[in-house]
Length: 117
Image (cartoon, rainbow, N blue to C red):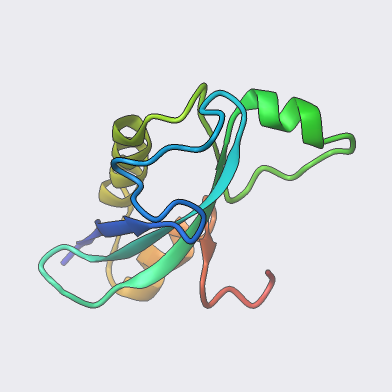
């Protein structure tokens, strides 16, 4: 049996209402977005962190090489495409059990239980 990842909801300590608020400069920002992800048909979820930012923010703040794991780069703040991209990633991540799904998602985001953070 193959299980499929499922985005339960998005949350951000930097932007309380992701769907209706926006950063001060939607074309130049970085915020933490936490994806609560579980398995389709189950309520349990773990947190996967993404730093959502724009190329303008990167250009202004990154002088040295930056590993990109855990980043979602967007042209400007728009909730719908951000939600859709993370939901697609979750839905396309499958495995025989939750540990496998979580490990695969951890390659793109930062899982709350990742010991290497």
